Length: 371
Image (tube, rainbow, N blue to C red; front, side):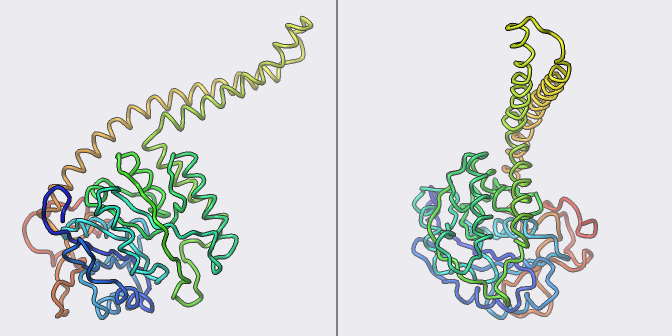
């Protein structure tokens, strides 16, 4: 039942995919089509400009909805587009999983149970990385470092911040706006916490990738992945908590300047010596000035952040109203029935803008031609 409304719940399992024709069929066929407390289960595939027959494989395996991006935009855009499509299709709960069969779809019930009970708005699957035999030690280390950074700087209690096996309530999905290119996993955790959503974590299995070679395409190298994850965390935190980030950094610079300033001051107090400390005074002055500037920038950015919070609340209200009326996915073309496909309910992004039906498009924020 829909919490607080007494209506049947609709679950949509979302699968972002790029060149996954060899594995996506297995994933879709393994997804259970019934769960306790859920009246309807559907599968949506967001094809991120695949060059192989990912769409055909997904259709043959029984996908209910297909959203096609005109080119490869990256995981974050595919996830965000799929999320909006699920909302437009009336999803009450959205589960995201990978297209390479590393997660066991039979464990979806574990993810949605806390949401059905009203205990959480977002549930992330903990892969228990330390216990995995098939994950290389370097990647285990990278995952631990990324999760640790998020816990330290964002206050997140999630132990496996890089897991892509997640469930979102409708309310939580409406408030998520991932936009940074590398991956959505870290920024959605920060955004959910910033929006007051309750985030829970449950243990899940993590299988070897079914694709040839069994390697992750997202993590090309551990070092680069850690740097990109850190950049994502810092950018997201600076967006939502600029005073905390810039203010603390500024205070650290000011503190370092004061520590350096102790040297000439202590000599002056002890010996009355005021000569020979020009370098210390310059360094202390520069650090203090930089720190003061960072604090000022933090205060200014905090004012901008307050405006952003108001803007996001307006966006949330617009999205909540819009998804009840439209099945269009910004910033791409409206979802339409795909020509030549007989199965009902299969939907895709229009490949030609002029083929869109006449009339206003209340959701588009820009055409695909400009992407």
